[in-house]
Length: 607
Ligand code: G6P
Image (cartoon, rainbow, N blue to C red):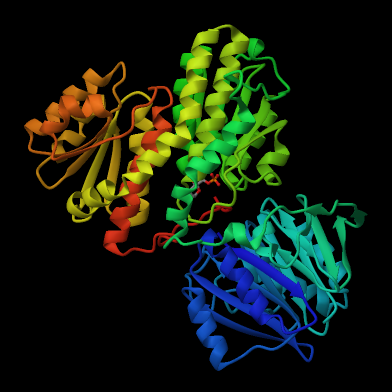
């Protein structure tokens, strides 16, 4: 979702603002803009659509100035037009904002009653007008921001630039992320360390309710009216890490990084020498945990679904999984001694964050599986189980998901060992299967032409596609369908194989490809029956199985791929790569915007 950047520079800042916005493109957006101060006056350029439109505009109407702010907007209040694009400005102040000002209508009513005229449909303008009203009452920018923070409700991050003040920028955060970058005589503020990466590696992360004043040499952070200390940290991100390399899309690059990042994540959770999981030090005793509640959104939720199978099977523990946006409002009672695990690539997703807050109110032990260790979800947790996926730029999650699965499987094994439900032999067998996984993923990637062929010949022309799976392959079917619909805009549904006859079977005819995710496991015979039910109705079957499964059912399928052999417990991780490739090549055949699918955002910081 929206990306924010602000720079107090020595040279013209517009090219740097645009560069930073390009690094924030991954978050998803539908308009963009920049503003600078020229002789004390705010000047802006904004454009609907992608950054190229803004760049074209800047070519015709350049924007000088050595202090400025920039924004990519994912529309919430008001359509994605130039008028509603940020920076939102009055003659006194320009604002860029991520998140939602929940009480904007109340503020707007008050400000309109004061005689102010609103020019946009955005909630953001309430902040700009509120600050302007304070400034017109002779408050300093600092006093105005401090007072505004008392009035604003919601989850947001914002940066403000003030007319006549070439020396300062201000930022504020509540819920959404915001970080300050320290340069040499230059200062930066932006959504995340990715935005700041090439400028500086010295980063100060703001906490909830912080507001900050930046000048060219440093920053002062406030909570209410008192100053607070926030440490300066070294960000490990480099420009190289966030490039596309030789790949056509970030998504393909990230799919191809999976052997490496799965290997890196394994290294920290598994000891290959002893073939046993490393037990991370957690503030809990698995033998005393009454229940595990797992919560997440989107693809990360499917990681919870797979993990439920693992915790139940390997650690014999009761597990509830909850879509975060439902969980937080249902307010279910959570048992004493329970653990809540939040799973999130960004660590920023507002529903997941709020769900974790709810679990905290229910006195659960809070764990999080996140890819961004400085994120809000990580900071709220009692312990963090990091995925070592590196920055994920493609909007559709790939390597973050497979590394989440690695972390969750190792955690389930650690719990099983502690609870005495998993023998040493079983642990060793699973460890060996995981050690093999990077090589098996590589073999799968080496077969990309087979996936491309199926994508082009069978999926790309379809209007609807069904994905079926049973057991822990069911979430993989859901993930396959989600990936296909978000990337290629083809309608796709994932179903538990056994449920097919309770509805979706009505859809099956020779125009509907059915992708069956079916490693040879204990319930292969059951999915084989579902396979026959589709076949009897003329459905076009695409079989993803291992050599044994393909030998059994391949001849009955329209097309099949033998995924490398792997232990069935670990199979969901490998089969995920298979469905990623199908979705990627289908989208490529359709020519859609793979890295930034329409209407989607990477970090969903609004409800
Ligand atoms: C968005 C992304 C998905 C992601 C979901 C949850 O919808 O497009 O790829 O799975 O958010 O994001 P998180 O950062 O919490 O994993």
